[in-house]
Image (cartoon, rainbow, N blue to C red; front, top):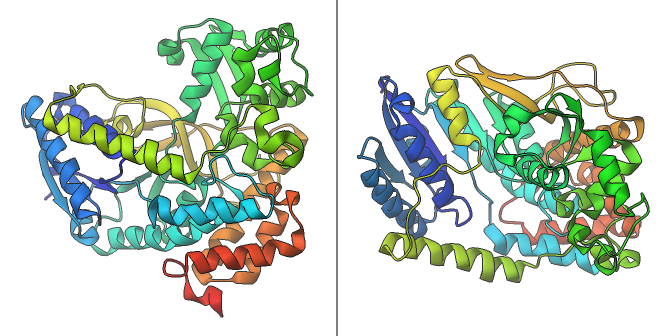
Length: 460
């Protein structure tokens, strides 16, 4: 209906994101400025009907606390959910943690150690092959049901690969969103002594890179260059570009940011994502010689711990919130997605980091349309990313390598092209830690584990 503001949340049964984002949407859409003159409708969609019902129950409870200004619907029918959508928020992982287990455990047998396994390299390639067909189908459904002008706001990983696949294969308006920059800003605030909550008023940052390996090229704090102060802070702790095993040093409080500090000292730009993510983009940090990353303060997270602690803990929290054993806080999280919906709807500027297709010639080696993380302003006219500059030469080459690999991973996933997938993996920096002749065997094992989800052409 034209008088409705229809926000569709695909993957609403997510144990990690379901409660947080549903609450964000309801708080923002219940405000007078969020509603404008259009009746807000939040549509919760997921194939997991049982856990979708839990999210719906909690959503109704939150909506009642906010005066029932938002109508809530839920469905397991993707096309039905998208019909009439203004925004489609995607939060899904085909096969879930169970499918992801092989992405982590099989490469481990070959000497490939992934702390996360969902952003880049072999884990992301397998995950992308499972997810790209679904993301393309969502975007095509948007076009088929008349929602081709709606925005897809993606928070699923591998962020850059999935966002690029939708933009390249369907042309739908799409942006990828991630919260890693907020953690980086929090780290800098503790080191450099500014108010993290006021960062938009205090900092001027320039950002470029691939999600989970993007770099602050510029950091001004109250108008002053922050990088000399950052370098002084790091060096004052006795840290050098070759530091390792900070857990044994006199500065153990810095042991989980070792990679950030080393890369900053080497290149003069700051990689703000967590070290567990950044490590997977390089060869040197995750191998037997570094105690599987422990020498750099990086820990490997098992699927078992994710199932028991993350999923189990999140479901326990959901049940306690529904039952009233835990208080529902009517706040909006740091996630940008609800604020972007509001900014576009009410035509009010909102500034944040985003992953969007890059059109330009200022990033040598980066293919046209590659999804690049950078700062962006949103308003009634859509998304307006800021101009970017190339990184220092070694990092720009590194960025271009990954951006081109992503193009091939997408093409391979769409077409079921085993040869092209293997070519991309053979160029991947992390996989330099294994026998390159074994990469086809590794890929075939992962493809077989995901056979029911990926393009059957991979199997000849």
